[in-house]
Length: 307
Ligand SMILES: CC(C)(COP(=O)(O)OP(=O)(O)OC[C@H]1O[C@@H](n2cnc3c(N)ncnc32)[C@H](O)[C@@H]1OP(=O)(O)O)[C@@H](O)C(=O)NCCC(=O)NCCS
Image (cartoon, rainbow, N blue to C red; front, top):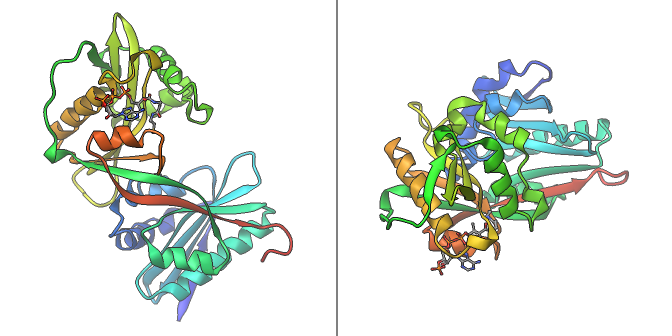
């Protein structure tokens, strides 16, 4: 018989079961363990976390699910839904609890991001009426097979070498001027850097030409639960080159330098999220990344009558 346990306010009692189920559930999509939430602590100990549900078969946790409120909106997000093999029924039950709670909290929409490769989860969501609303490609580069490069006409610096966060963000915003949704804020970069090892300043690179920043890339190390002895992979964010210096090898060199620095730390898997079609995909493919999966959002309207 499946027992359902819920946690609110204090999520500490859930943490062990959480990581246990995630590790097994995402065995075929290890990048999920380091993508948005790195581990149970990360996921549940956020201010926005609202509810965690665990289904158990005796002592053994077989399904986990959690709900998160997106600040200042009527959207609620299932921040996690994972279940062990042959435990679809527990998955259904936990999903119902999450939908029920989102209804009680008067959310208008419920959404969840999942790896498309996970057919069991996809089927369960579709069966309950959630529909795909967005998708992004997960691109992967295995660093052990990378080539060396020639000396560029610009230099590479980093936030560890005294380059200011303000200049870094200005260059990044110039590069992303065409896409407002991806504009970085200085305060958020300061907050990331303040997290220490995870956003090590040595890995936040900037290409400099004539004293100006012309390209930037941010990198996060993933303290996920696969490897106990340190981060096993890294994620790239905000790779951007100012329009005047594009197609001159700046982005390629930034990625090459990042690879070099990561390999020194024995990190061999590099991931990023990008458009499935178009966007920067041609660049990433030319840099050797391959699309590992699609990370898709499924959503469900909670308006009256849709339950
Ligand atoms: C994507 C971006 C970072 C590429 O920077 P870049 O410095 O111009 O790239 P590089 O010169 O190093 O390109 C290396 C190779 O990638 C490929 N490439 C790069 N941009 C490309 C484009 N727009 N179309 C097709 N191929 C492209 C080419 O094969 C290129 O080699 P080539 O110039 O010898 O043909 C830059 O266009 C940019 O800042 N775009 C806006 C921000 C953005 O979309 N960032 C990605 C976020 S997910």
